[in-house]
Length: 267
Length: 191
Image 1 (cartoon, one colour):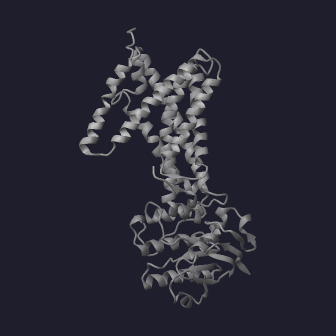
Image 2 (spheres, helix red, strand yellow; image 1 turned 180 degrees about the vertical axis):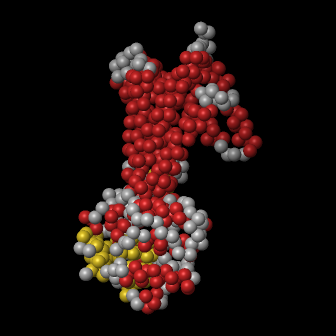
Image 3 (cartoon, helix red, strand yellow; image 1 turned 90 degrees about the vertical axis):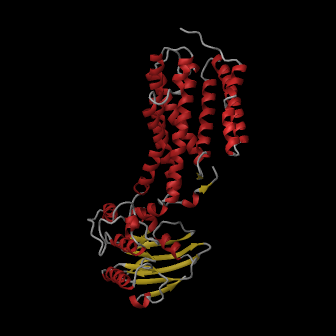
């Protein structure tokens, strides 16, 4: 196996020069994004440095406590972020998003660890549990935020049609179905596109990482496929879960569509 | 016997302690200035909007004791603006007929294959009234359903509503048309 090239801080400094290309575009086109760009780059650096440090600690500890704590924090932050990305809020949406994020990503990760990978150690072996959950969460976040936003937008903007169906005797589910279908599609399209593009248009991140770390390409490809399937499962579970939760939140006990509960925010 | 009975209905700041009785076969026209809560009242009666207090019953059976879809099939609301579902006129009727579990019937004077999203305001209102009459509701709550129709088309819509009332249905019709109540021989109410 080829030795792994260690990245030094100087190397990362050189990589950061590439962000300058972004800054140059900003300057030439006067996009006014300079400050945000700088903040985003610094934020990414700080977050990854922290992640590296925390994972270092987690990898050293034994027992499930540390892994559970890290994964709970990750899932909670992802659940909050999924709502914050959207343009609409409804009371209870943060709890719903966090709950859906936890259930979908934990279910899929557990299945992946215990059934598919059948890892040699306990389920909380950080080497497997943390990166797998991280990949699943990052992508489930996308599906959940898109699906949630599409559902709330649909109920808000398509109120007349939803109420038309309600007024003619539709159940809540019958009236909400067109909105829910559109929202599910919106949430799942990115992962469908990713599965189509993978290997032809793009070399995905996890496979890139494994190849750079010296792993055999065949193994890297198999791991990538496993991850893609896990992500697809989590996105499907999460998207369906969150749009059904959105449905519950915007209808009341008499199946009335309560658009007065939906609040628009600048996203 | 009273068909639709409303007692003490309150939704502040629009109306407070509102009482209303509609007998089977009765047509009432509800008028009032814009913003007085006429649409809100129809929506509340159809159980599409909540109220602060009050009771509504149909043929002696309270609304709370009736599942929402069953209530709304019986107390039918035709929305202001006559929204349509995606698809053709025929598909719009079929979708509603399927919900009501009745056979679809053609809309008079409308091309069944016309795209419902491209209908004129008047055509959409014809479709809306037709949908509202499907499946023989007990009460019709009509919200400005002829506002975009020309006189002959409005007269035809009025005669459809009168025929519905002759068969025992009750009608509460919100309209800005000052002569509507007189033409229909209906009771006039205001908010």
